[in-house]
Image (tube, rainbow, N blue to C red; front, side):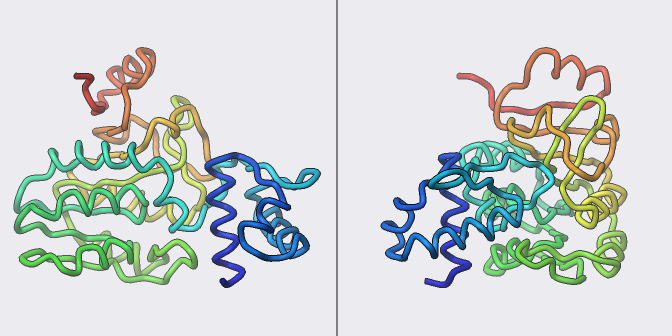
Length: 256
């Protein structure tokens, strides 16, 4: 196993269990404890954990972007619920934009049975996911690949996204805060989301409930600048009132 693969698996374990122990990881991966300590040194340098005696603890930090393959395994049930709600918003023949978030990949999976869609995206993963769908137009934004993120960014990506006019754009973010608005961990991804918003008649934010009351590094927009927020569980009454005052529709799974 490559060191990068092992570190990604350690990172997954950190996210799930919030802490890891060196000797247990050494047994799990059949490597020396010194090798695991070097892995934890690298993860600590990346800002994703803090080493402690005999192990490490996860660093809950919204300014850090996790590798895409790690993010797709987080909050899976929540993202599936969001995708099901989003599918109900998309009509056959629609032109839509999907951003390069892991939630958007779940949306792409959910809508594959629809017909005659045009999907514009800066996500390599979504282009691969939709490569076997017939009767659709799948359009790449173009741009430079963001390492580890499977996202296309930069001036060409911005130009590609701004060249189209679509009915709906769906995008995610790292933080949703009443005062600071919608925020993300990377200014280049933030610029991409600002551009795709301008290209859409309806702007839809897709975030699981863990993103509420969080603030990340770079601001995307104020909450009143979007039309709909789709989430995986009912927000608090104070949040629902705030969204209503700002004329933002909120969709969430209804209790049966």
